[in-house]
Image (spheres, rainbow, N blue to C red):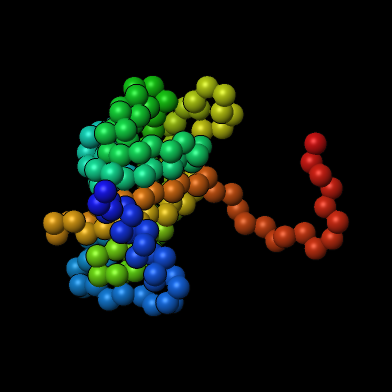
Length: 170
């Protein structure tokens, strides 16, 4: 069975991490990667699941802030279509502070800060998502950058680690 683009992306990341190098890409590539990351906010705020999903590869892996793993563009489109019908119907997503690093000329890692307003909480979840950070692995396919792997994490302000005994929370 041939390897998928996501498999190649992950292999490239592993290789780059072991060699400690950063690849050189075309000058326009960084701007294009940043544009894909920020377009998430535009397509999300329009509640356009198809346009949002089109930013991802066909075989993408998406892990959202709740740890739900969506496999493939069709699954992402389907889940967001449902989400936009109620939970995210009035939500607005803003993407800021996108940092890009190239692993190879055709693979980039981006980290993006995000904020969201107007979201409702899914059943059983106490607080709707409001701010966090994304890790995106993007691959260049047919001259276009697309998100192959995506991990989204709710953010909380960083605090120093305790230096003494810690009581277990109950």
